[in-house]
Structures are given as structure tokens and as C-alpha cells.
Image (cartoon, rainbow, N blue to C red; front, side):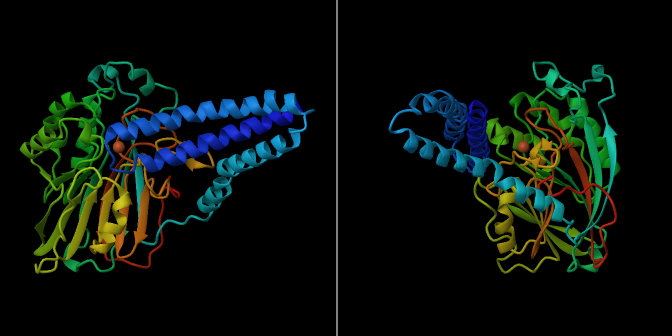
Amino acid sequence: MTALLVILALLAASGHVAMSVYLNNRLHAQGWPRGLTKVLSAASHTLTPVGAVAVAWACIVWLPGVAGAGSASAAWWLLAAYVAVCGLVALGPLPLSLWQRRAYRPPAALLSNHSTLLDLSQEPEAGGLVGPGWRRWLVRLPGNEVLRVEINEKRLALPRLDPALEGLSIVHLSDLHFTGAIGRRFFERAVERANAMEPDFVAITGDLLDKTACIDWVPYTLGRLRARHGAFFVLGNHDLRVDWRRLRETLEDSGVVDLGGRSLVAQVNGRSVLLAGNELPWFSPAPSAPGEEGDEPCALRILLSHSPDQIDWARRHGFDLLLAGHNHGGQICLPVVGPVFSPSRYGVRYAAGVFERPPTLMHVSRGLSGKTPVRYGCPPELTRLVLTRAIGQSFASGVESRPGG
Ligand SMILES: [Fe+2]
């Protein structure tokens, strides 16, 4: 009987943890004031163990105590129903997740993904790869992948692509999270690799830093990005926590163009390419009806957004390509289960990868870093996207992520 009660208590605790993860994923997708988000998040984190202990106490101490009393039967049924609900919450999504991952096929628009590894974990720290502070021990945790950057080249099919834009390339960088835990040298190396890809555009999709002091890194890192037709950025929710006005100014002064809440048209091979930035829900406004105000139609419409939750906004405004980040691929992907943490109102659905939501094709980067420098089963990512009109070709090779992975 004791073993059964312990199992019931564990089941209830699992349900509390699952509910807390579900709520926190949605909570951090909202644009609510940070103070409110922190309070609600802390309440959730507190109630999870408190509730688990309460149920454990009920299962292990209280129930056996009332077993002989007249109310025992009702108490048993009440607790059994509660534990059953917790069990469903904890274990219910698991079969669905396993089925989704098993049934997953890369979208037809992803023609190929060739990956190489930039392994900086073997380099000496003396070069500024790992910074000082208490987080440095996290960077050096056994198996931690934060210094092992996956360099991807993904070919994406856009059947409506103007022939003059065939082969257009975009280096997509996201979620750099300068904190000092991972040193400036790491990002300088990533920028060197990005420049070696010789892209037409560079797109940076937010969460650039978590410490205002790290704005001084910008000229030595993002400011050195090179692309034939320019480098562009939008900001993310973490940028809102620092001196973001100075961050925008520094980026602009370094030659990186601010797309936050605005759009512009670039000329590529005689064709107009619309570039727009949507920083909702953290920075307003979104660009107002970009390219729909009687302007001549653009051959290609690209949207930068920190959050992939803006996918429906992108579709409504007819964007061909949406580049996003924010979810970090979950940062930790459990064996079989995959990602768990993904601050999106869609949960882990858009944690990372390529998604076809006609008329929009979306690429969600796992990002290059994170505020907490820990990654397992989910290495940082630096990706060159190559656009092509080619259709009907199958996915060639690579490690494109499973749903959310
Ligand atoms: Fe981020």
C-alpha cells in the first residue's frame, strides 16, 4: 500500500511540474510587464513544489490516517480523481509528442540541410572564449554544447521566387544573449564564419544582450558583419531589459540597420525586396501594412520577428519568408521526448526548424547562445539560407530538427 501511495504522490507531482511548464511557456510569450511576468512565474514555481508536498502528505500521511474513518471512502475517491487529472496532464502529451516526432517529415520546402561543426570548446579560455563570473562553471558542465556551433546551409524552395533572385542567400543569426558568461571571442568567431558565407543579407532576430555593459561588444561583433545588401536587426524581449535605445543607436552606428517596427525596400539584381521588422509583443508598433500602400509590389517579402508567434501576422500580410528565434529550440532536448521549454503560445510547436504555413515559409533559429549557458541535444546554430525556385526535390541530408527540436 505504501508503494502505491508513493506512486500516486509522484504522479501528482509530475502533473504539477507539467502544468507549471505549460503555463510558463505561455506566460513568457506574452508582452506583459516584466514585473507581472516574474511574479506569476515565481508563483507557479512556488506552488509546484508546495502542491506536490501537499498531495504527497495527503497520500502518505493523511489518507492512511483516515482509512478507518467514515469519510475515508470519499477522501479516497477525491484524491484518486485529483491524481488521475494530474497523471493525464503529466503523461497525456507524451504519446502525442512521441507520435509527432515519429511521424515528422521535413517540410517539402526544405530541400537540403548541410551541417558542419564549429567546435570552440577545445580552444583555450585565455583567448576570451569564456568570461568571468559564476556562470562560467555552467559553460564547462560535462556534455554542455554551448561552445559547439552547428553551421548550417539550408536550401529553401520558394516556387514564386523571381528568377532574378534565384540563389539569394541570407545568414540568419538570433538570440546571441551577450552576458559575459560566454566571452566576446566566441561571438567574434561566429561573425567570422558568417562573413565567410558571403551572404546577400544578414538577418538578426533579437535577444542580442542581457547586460547593458555588453553594448560595447557590438562594434567588435555584430558591427563587423558583412553582406552584399546589408545587415538588419530587430530586438527581442531580453533587449527590453537593457538600455535598448543605446543598443539601437550603437547597432545603427556600426552599420546594422534597424528594422524594428518599420520596413524598407532593397534592390537586388533589379528587383525590389521588402524587408520588414515586427517586434511584437514587446516593442510596438508592427510595421503598418508594409508594402501595401499603393507601392509597386515587391518581388520578395521578408519579415524579421523575434517571436515565431507572429506567423499569423506574417501570413495576413503576405510575407514569403519569416525569420524568427526566441524559443532556442528548447535549449535542452530530452531523449525521445525532445524540447520541453519553449516560451511560445504554441508551446514547443515552433521551437526551431522550418515550417510551411502558406503563403509564408518560416525559419526558426535555435539561436547562438542563451542567458543561461546550458544546452543539451540542442547546439547553437548559425545558418545560411539559400532561396531557390526549385520544387519537387526531396530533402537531401542533414540534421533538420523534429517538431520543436
Ligand atoms: Fe532568447
